[in-house]
Length: 118
Image (cartoon, rainbow, N blue to C red; front, side, top):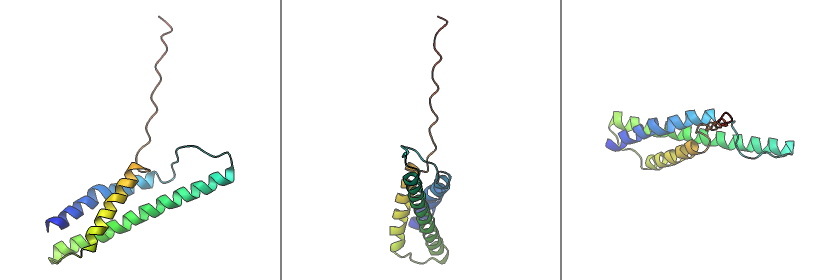
């Protein structure tokens, strides 16, 4: 029962916020842009589709882990061992999302005023 509660807490505290933060950063781009408009468009489509696929995978794995863990708690059944693998994969993908496109952009540091009056 403790493992199931740990899984529910892990999904609710890490995977669900990762999906929310990742959906906000889905279209955000950083880095260099190509001078070729066609290549730039293709890279954007590829980037957004891979991010969307990752978010969908995190969401599906989170739902599967939550349903199995809550079902095992409520019905007092043994949880299948593959759910533990799904849980670890879900957490790893959630960390990937948070560290790549789920984090907020840093604000640029303000330049100091020049001491011209001195």
